[in-house]
Amino acid sequence: MHLRFRFWAEAVLAALTTALFVLTLVSRDWIERIFHVEPDAGSGALEWLIVATLLVASVALIAAARAEWHRAAS
Image (cartoon, rainbow, N blue to C red; front, side, top):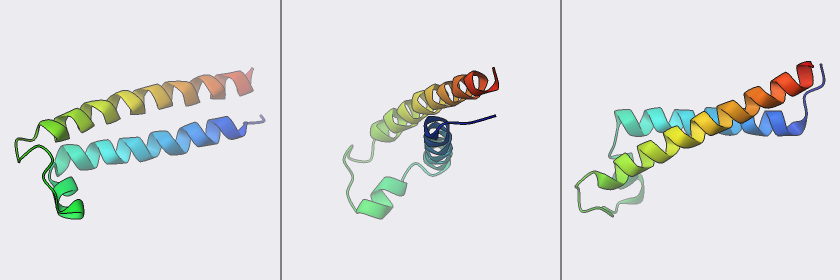
C-alpha cells in the first residue's frame, strides 16, 4: 500500500489538534499561562470556542486521513 504525503500530513495534524483539544479541555487556562494575557477577561468563553474549534478540526482531519487511507488500500 502506498500512502501519499497527504495522509501523513492529515494524520499528524489530527494528532496535534486532538492533543491540543484534550489539553484545552483539561487545563483551560494554558493560554493565559503561556502568553500572560487574558483575552476574554477570565470568562472562559475563548477557551470553549477553542475547544469546539479543535474538536471540529480533529474530526475533519481524522475523516480526511481515513478517506486517504481507504483510497490507498483500494
